[in-house]
Image 1 (cartoon, rainbow, N blue to C red):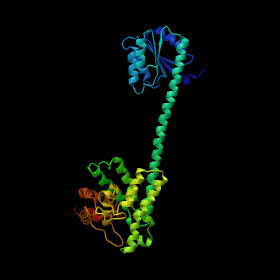
Image 2: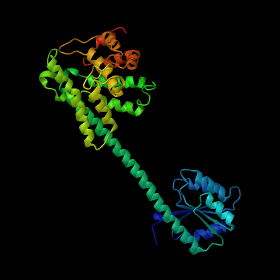
Image 3: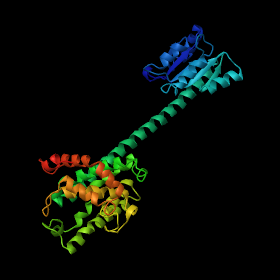
Image 4: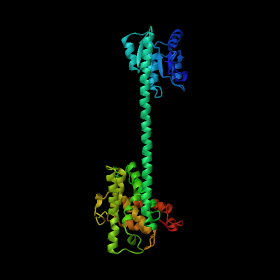
Length: 376
C-alpha cells in the first residue's frame, strides 16, 4: 500500500553491521520511513528524539552495549517503554529468545532473515501498537473529560450555593456579610480542631472544604419565614419566636428534598443539611428543633453554632446594638458545656484574634473601629 512519506510509520533499525542495515532498509523503505543506528547509544538517542519511532528492529550482538541492554533501558524509560521492540539476531537458542521476551521485546526473529516473515510480523506489531495507542489516548481523553466535567459540576455547585445564600440574605438585608464571616469562622475553627482526637476522623481536608462551601446555607430556611416576623424591628413574642425557629426545619427539609432528587447521599448536601437543621441545637439539650444532647449534635452543626452566635452578637440589628468582641467572647465562654461543645469553646478562645480579624475583613461597614481597636 502506497502512503505519503509523512504518513508512513517510522522504523528504527539498529545493527552494528553496515550490510545488515542496508539489507533491512532496502526491504522496508517502500512501506516505512527508516532510521538507522549502528550502536546502542545512538539507538537510545534516536528513540528519545522529537519524533519517536513506531517500532524498533534491534540486533543483539553489538559492541559496548548489546541489544539486551538497549531493550532494558528502553523499557525502563516511561517515555519510550511503549515502543515495540523486535529482536533481529543470529542467536537461535530458546534461552536467548526467552531472555529477550522477558526484557519486554514483542517478537524475536532469527537470521538469516525471511523477508515475508519479517514484513508480516512488523505489520502485525504496528497494528497492535496502533490499537494500544488508540486505547491509551482514549483513556487519557476520557480522564481529562471526566476532570473537566467535574470542574463544571463544582463550578455550578459553587454558583448555586452563592445564589441560594444570597437569596436568603436578601430577605434580611441587615445581615450583610454574615454568610462570608460565618463560613470563614467555621473553616478556621475546623482547621484548628483537625488533629483533635474527638474530631480527627471527621475533619479531613475534604470535609473542611465541604464545610466552608455549605456553611452559607445554614439559614436557607429563613426564606420560608414571613416578613412580618423576619424583619420585625424589635424583639419577637413567643408565637413569633416559635415561627422563627421553624427556619431550621424548613432549611433541613429543603436540602433533604434536594438530596432525594439527586438519587442518593451526596457529602456536600449531607453536611449542608446537618448545618441548616441542627445549628441551633445546644450541648445541654435545650436547643431546637430536636433537643439533641452533646455528641448527638452533628460536628458540622456544632461548629456553625459558635460561628453563628459569635457573629450575631457582634453584629448590629434594628433591635440591638452590636456587642464588642470582648463581650461576645465572654458569652461564648459562659456557654461552654451548656450551649456549646466544650472543646470547641476552648478552640474558639485560642482563636479569638483570628475571629476578630475575619470580622474586620468582612465587616458590614467601612469603619469597623470597634473590632479593630478593642483590646483582646
